[in-house]
Length: 371
Image (cartoon, rainbow, N blue to C red):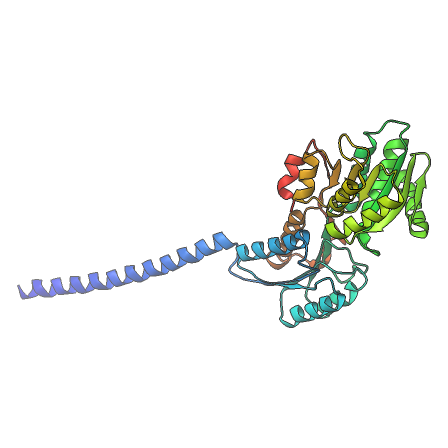
């Protein structure tokens, strides 16, 4: 009996040790499972910090870019700091200095001015922090990863072609132009794109020839505030500056319409200014839209208000410049660099979203990408 009792105690001791071993293994396995789950959900255990030196939050377009960057960083578990320059180049530089000093891993920049952006980029470049420009082009591309924006030239060209295709052969275009701000690279590309599209559609020339003719109109516009292409029967009788907004677009349009009451085309470099022009046309008693005297086209951007006006037959066409698409593409590149280890210097100077003229035929397909 005594021997049997000792054997039983030994078995009990071995069983206890085995149970403890199994328990330890279970805890280790459980921990491994949790870690594995974390990896599968986030793609990486490493968190990054991102800064965004935003031109301004005053306007739905810019605010949407900031919101999308912030939301996607939160989804990835990244820290994101957005600083508003309030359209001031000095504040922008200070914001870039603040973000650089904080040691962020990458900076997005939507610059106030393409020339002043050189100093802003230099701060981050000297600190070895990659900079991805969103929306606004910069003069000096040597210190950036890339600039992400819509295809301004092709958007404008497609909008111009679409408008010109609606005209009778002998129709004489008498247009006024609403531009954003002087020196804007995007603004020049957008209006020249519309010029080229109209010329190409009305004359049957090649795209290369159309761009050459558009550049001639641009030079005339800069020197005299007017431009003309005889073969396309296309005259621009005045240019106004609406600073990209509805309110200032209204003021600029009122001045242009007062000076050019026979206008039959209002062209704009973004649709908020065009919406301001609609009020100016109403006040002047000039009908517009599907059954009106004047047609309205914009090379960009694609606000929900603009798309609603297309649905209502008030605006003919808008080039798609989606802040949602731009922000998403910028974040894709950021992940390639920070998570996948892509070389920041391997990217082209310009990365563009796909061009599209949004019209009554396709507005529903593009509506959710508006802002």
